[in-house]
Length: 407
Image 1 (spheres, rainbow, N blue to C red):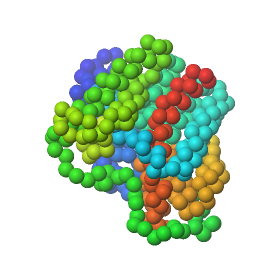
Image 2: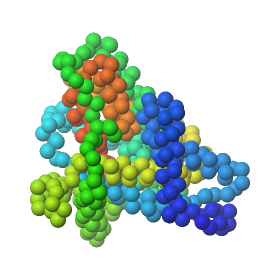
Image 3: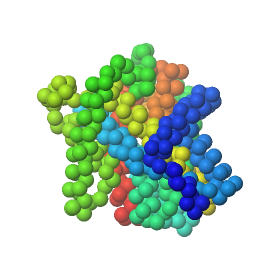
Image 4: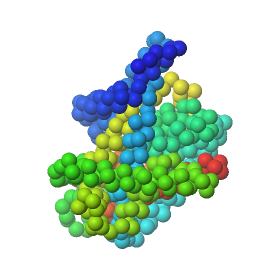
């Protein structure tokens, strides 16, 4: 650690250590306050916000700024998005069928509308278009991970120094709005149209932390690490090739694409040095994804400089208010009719509420709460995770650079 001109610089090793501590603090706080779990607030978000508030109070009281060395955080980002690519299977398109295509089409259209809404509201306040994008698909439908991933580039390329803080603020409040929105919408639709499941079946709560199952040996863990590194190396090569062609994409995007390509082009039982199958959707890869994302978010959130976004409080809350209204209208008057006005459609609407303003965990929590009360909806638990956990990242990776370049 070094102190220079009122700034306390914290090195990479201690930054990672603090990130882990912040993650555990968030876990303890979430366990102590039930409403945080009900709102599906991620543990690193809880802990990171607490630490960022404490750091802001320290700055207000003493004038001392704290800066963290975050190169290890960026490394974790590449790890996380590479695991998403490794876990992606294009064959899942066949399972979802027509409902998946309908929901995906609506979601892509909604992402365009969400960005246009953010840019328009930002323009009304005389702000640059990238700030509107931070209040659009970058942070809302993209969530904390996408906001944190794109904020450094937006800050560097467009001179928006507090891009990280704006993106995180929008993602956090969007998460809360999404949690509030999903369940009540499904209840309204179910009661108004007297909907119920066509067949009584066991509940399917989708993907969850406790649903991974299976023991993980050290060789399983190393095998997953090796697969991630192979895809990351291909991602780096792909990134450099695209850069030489004049197309600049963040490294995590090309690593995501590399993971998808390797997983879907090479047979799973292709002979490997480890003697095992390609570790797509294995507990080891899921564990690494959780570790990477959790520590990445904790480090990013604890390093926020909240005092830099006071001047943008009005525009941010205005953007979020308008985005909430747009999401509500799209869910009720587009998603529900397009999905058939059935019980499954109502559960999908609860999930879409989580997608539109929040994250994959929020969507799953919304649908789980509805299905536990009214009955199972296997169709919803097939197509919503595919859309929000896979396709959104791919579409956003193309949509965000397009809007940055043209607005």
